Amino acid sequence: MHELYLMMRFMLDRIQCRARAALNGDPECGALTIEWIVIAVSVALAAGIAYGLFKASVQKEANQLP
Image (cartoon, rainbow, N blue to C red; front, side, top):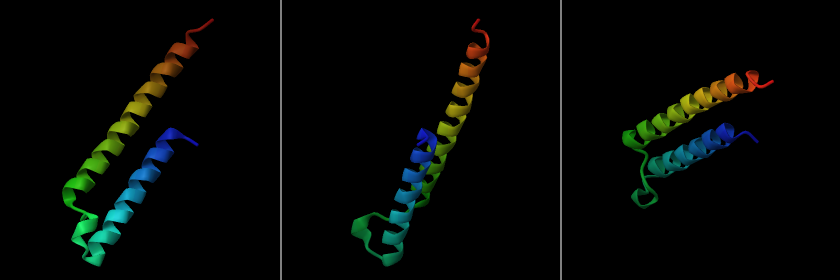
């Protein structure tokens, strides 16, 4: 599987788990807060940008090979 897909799937699963815990009212399970959502979105965006830059760089260098 693709690494970016796996990372996104893991983050979505963690968000769903935290959302269920928050909706059940169980504070011991860890509540879903806006800070965690912002962090998850920031990490996902950074990973997507890094992936795009890395892929473009590798393709550029691969095209220069004889």
